[in-house]
Length: 201
Image (cartoon, rainbow, N blue to C red):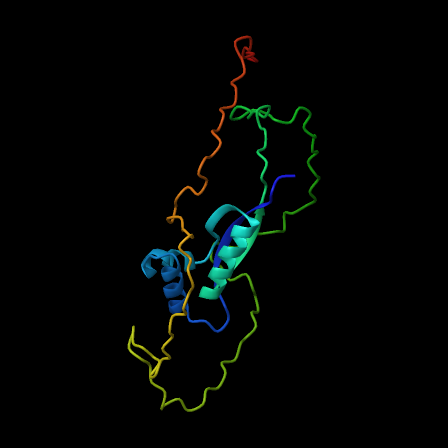
């Protein structure tokens, strides 16, 4: 049986109670790069930090990344290549169903008394009236200027110390993480020289 392999995936989630900027600093230090280079990893969505590694290496990455403050997921991948040599794609516009089901149209009764409202019309004849809620005295509340720091005494998050991770690397954003991808074979084009178009006029 082949050894299981894993992708180390990150979905932009950090450990509870951790400061995002500090976690970015930790990750940048972990991979010996700048916080700006790792910032796209925190934008949400699935990001693969390392692809197709064995279980031992995957757990090593996870331990280091979780210590830095990230929440990562080890996603098992298939280690066997799938043979698609006998799979072909039908031409554009081809009917791929040999015997498509015939759907009979349903009978519709008399709808002469049904009308359609104009675009943008209020289709509720008697919409419910929502009473505005009373607001207390807010004369002592002010709004900060746009872009102002609303925390008067923000906490300073110190980056955590990380051990030796000189053996770890990180793929560039958008890089092809499969080192030796299997070349894609083009589907064979069927011989259509014996086909003709029937004139039904």
